[in-house]
Image 1: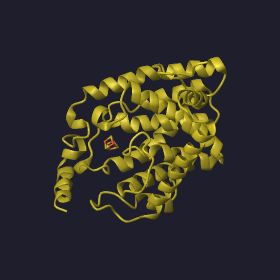
Image 2: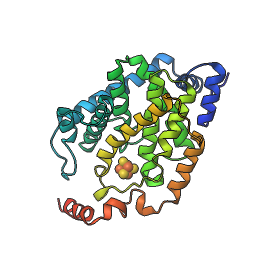
Image 3: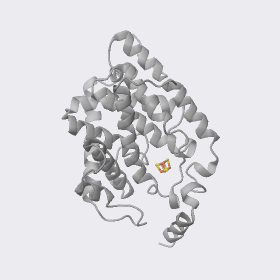
Image 4: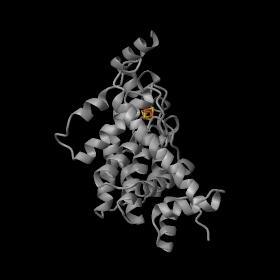
Length: 290
Ligand code: SF4
């Protein structure tokens, strides 16, 4: 029996054929392809989930600003406040995601999922949903597995680096991973997981990578917060039975094509977008003189 997959469509087909979940296909493939037991894989995922939690705490508890003074302390401010417009889950996801990215900007340990710049989206969204729904570690492991399959497919068939595909490749992939994890954790069908991926990615296509002063802080830190909520939106749509007219694999291909068509100025060079606004340039000059 082969659980080998190359596309999101392959994972869906295997899940439906064997009447298992999206994440189950991913772990069965891992067991086939690598010399590791299920216990070892689950233990490794739990280790990373623990890092999710500790990076959230690092971000919430270390309120000092970064050396560049571009970020730091915002997650703690949000944590001390309360939502005025958002649901508790969305507010918490936003807060946690910003916390993790603030932790990253201060060199605390994070899980790159898929990259360091986008490291807040998954833990923010997944932890918030798990806490609000009181889901246990096993449910989170299932979500993590589903998101791993998404990350694998995007990395192998498209790109996950801002330098290659813009921020849509980094935070876009992170949002799709988080959306798939949420649907899986909440017991959605494999088809719904796939809709969440498509809806997540297609609604952020074209997102530029334009970090001010070449540092992963502006717009990255708050962007993680915004797209953690976006991931929840995509998951909510999918769980409600809303379908994407464009299949997930086509959306991923479109993301790849758009990314590679983007000018280099919008792919992590800091030669375009927010990085070259008058304020962005002034910050860069100040940072260079530190
Ligand atoms: S703007 Fe660029 S560096 Fe920042 S998170 Fe997005 S892809 Fe990463």
